[in-house]
Amino acid sequence: MVTFAEVTIFHLRRAYHDSLSNMRGWLLDTSLSERLSVLDRLSIIDAWQQEMMEYFTKNGYCFACNRRVTRCTCPHEQH
Ligand SMILES: [Zn+2]
Image (cartoon, rainbow, N blue to C red; front, side, top):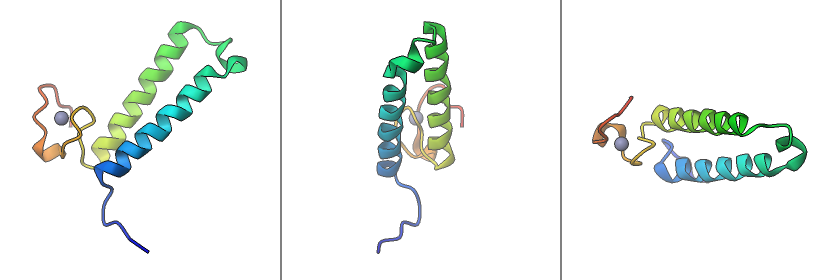
Protein backbone atom coordinates (compact mmCIF):
# COMPACT_ATOMS: atom_id res chain seq x y z
CA MET A 1 0.00 0.00 0.00
CA VAL A 2 1.39 3.33 -1.04
CA THR A 3 1.14 6.20 1.37
CA PHE A 4 1.42 9.69 0.00
CA ALA A 5 3.24 12.17 2.15
CA GLU A 6 1.39 15.01 0.54
CA VAL A 7 -1.34 15.67 -1.97
CA THR A 8 0.19 16.01 -5.42
CA ILE A 9 -1.06 18.07 -8.33
CA PHE A 10 -2.32 14.83 -9.90
CA HIS A 11 -4.61 14.24 -6.95
CA LEU A 12 -5.83 17.80 -7.07
CA ARG A 13 -6.53 17.66 -10.77
CA ARG A 14 -8.33 14.35 -10.34
CA ALA A 15 -10.44 15.80 -7.56
CA TYR A 16 -11.12 18.84 -9.72
CA HIS A 17 -12.40 16.75 -12.63
CA ASP A 18 -14.49 14.50 -10.39
CA SER A 19 -16.01 17.51 -8.73
CA LEU A 20 -16.64 19.20 -12.07
CA SER A 21 -18.50 16.23 -13.52
CA ASN A 22 -20.52 15.93 -10.31
CA MET A 23 -21.53 19.55 -10.52
CA ARG A 24 -22.36 19.27 -14.23
CA GLY A 25 -24.52 16.22 -13.60
CA TRP A 26 -26.27 18.07 -10.84
CA LEU A 27 -26.87 21.19 -12.91
CA LEU A 28 -28.12 19.11 -15.84
CA ASP A 29 -30.59 17.32 -13.60
CA THR A 30 -33.75 18.95 -14.95
CA SER A 31 -35.86 18.32 -11.86
CA LEU A 32 -33.44 20.59 -10.02
CA SER A 33 -32.21 23.00 -12.66
CA GLU A 34 -35.74 23.93 -13.79
CA ARG A 35 -36.05 25.72 -10.50
CA LEU A 36 -32.77 27.54 -10.93
CA SER A 37 -32.36 30.78 -12.79
CA VAL A 38 -29.31 31.47 -14.91
CA LEU A 39 -28.04 33.72 -12.15
CA ASP A 40 -28.51 30.94 -9.61
CA ARG A 41 -26.47 28.60 -11.76
CA LEU A 42 -23.73 31.14 -12.28
CA SER A 43 -23.42 31.76 -8.58
CA ILE A 44 -23.26 28.01 -7.92
CA ILE A 45 -20.45 27.67 -10.47
CA ASP A 46 -18.76 30.70 -8.95
CA ALA A 47 -18.93 29.25 -5.44
CA TRP A 48 -17.68 25.91 -6.69
CA GLN A 49 -14.70 27.51 -8.42
CA GLN A 50 -13.88 29.50 -5.30
CA GLU A 51 -13.97 26.29 -3.29
CA MET A 52 -11.65 24.51 -5.74
CA MET A 53 -9.27 27.45 -5.66
CA GLU A 54 -9.10 27.28 -1.88
CA TYR A 55 -8.61 23.52 -2.04
CA PHE A 56 -5.63 23.94 -4.37
CA THR A 57 -4.13 26.72 -2.29
CA LYS A 58 -4.61 24.75 0.93
CA ASN A 59 -2.55 21.95 -0.58
CA GLY A 60 0.18 24.30 -1.76
CA TYR A 61 -0.72 24.67 -5.43
CA CYS A 62 -1.91 27.55 -7.55
CA PHE A 63 -5.30 26.92 -9.13
CA ALA A 64 -4.57 29.02 -12.20
CA CYS A 65 -1.20 27.61 -13.27
CA ASN A 66 -1.01 24.34 -11.27
CA ARG A 67 2.42 25.29 -10.00
CA ARG A 68 3.59 25.13 -6.45
CA VAL A 69 2.47 28.30 -4.70
CA THR A 70 6.13 29.06 -4.02
CA ARG A 71 6.89 28.89 -7.76
CA CYS A 72 3.74 30.59 -8.97
CA THR A 73 4.26 33.66 -11.13
CA CYS A 74 0.63 34.52 -11.73
CA PRO A 75 0.09 38.29 -11.78
CA HIS A 76 -2.92 38.37 -9.45
CA GLU A 77 -2.10 35.66 -6.97
CA GLN A 78 -4.15 35.58 -3.80
CA HIS A 79 -2.21 33.16 -1.68
ZN1 LIG B 1 -0.13 30.55 -10.43
